[in-house]
Length: 438
Image 1: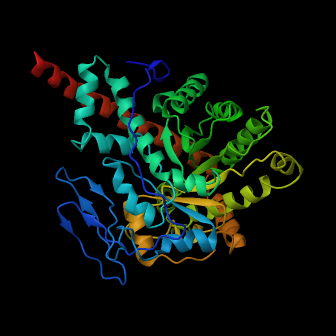
Image 2 (image 1 turned 60 degrees about the vertical axis):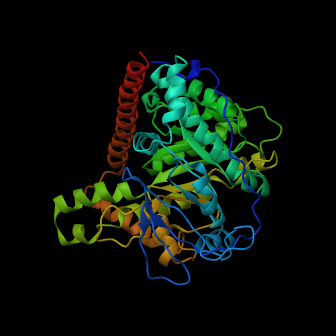
């Protein structure tokens, strides 16, 4: 299979988008493909659309529009950004990419993707078939074809978010694409893949996603030093998060750039998966004290991550970089969907609201927050409580480093499985196409 660093540069056509107004207004209608699912909220109408394959996709429709079809009512997402300085992003990407336009008008300010998202999108939709057929007919191998499918989606999405990127002077409006999960333990391979993706996507508002594995932390420094913006993903513990911050700072300092304003980064700190694992540990312990701490570990650790963020991005070292135009590496809350149905569906959004942060939400979390989320600064409202929970879990025998290591390994393996599964599916489809052409 082809190495991503050796792929030829495909030709792409980006979808054009109308310029965003400074204060777009709308009411929304999320529909399942094949029919609406109503939700009793006013003045918004929400549903999720599902296509014939059963793939869910959050689609925003305006119930009131102006003469240009632009939604005409504000949403909670606008308030989240304008009142609290948190950027709401959408954790999903599929074709048609133009489905993002009403989401952008509703207040979404960026997009994240990963191998699992693309596995679901490409394997469950016919929207990729024609381009894939052309690539196979042209003699492309399967992995090369995969990357061309992905890069086209990323380029087209970047075009849609470019107005936000321009309006914020490069502070927002990013679309993230992840290096191959097969490179999670390959420092140099990750650097080369990041350089290639940055070159082939060729958009100022693309984030190259690099996992925060021990082997890839040095990669982060190198890629940042090259002036490439990075979304560091799969962060599950405070020590690893601090190493990620240091890699970003080291990369800025070693870049040799006199103007650092165009090099930005986010650190994707995963949330709900922490509770999923720690809750199982607490149930195994089984004491009343342990059981009472279920559902509290993830938000407590995230709160302390924000405290660390404030500490690291202050002081003489940081101020010296600010003089060269450096921007803070924003904390991005990832894995914000609730896995335990017994928990509130905004558990990993409402308590983590604060300035200079990002919350990337998949369909269910975004729908829930737009329906009944509360916009209020919460991330640092009770740090002492978070510290107490964190310490109480340690006293019960919860090893935070072990939790982080296990979740990291599971995350990498999950992405590898999705990546490999999709390549197998694409190979089968490619073989079928070749057989038909004989």
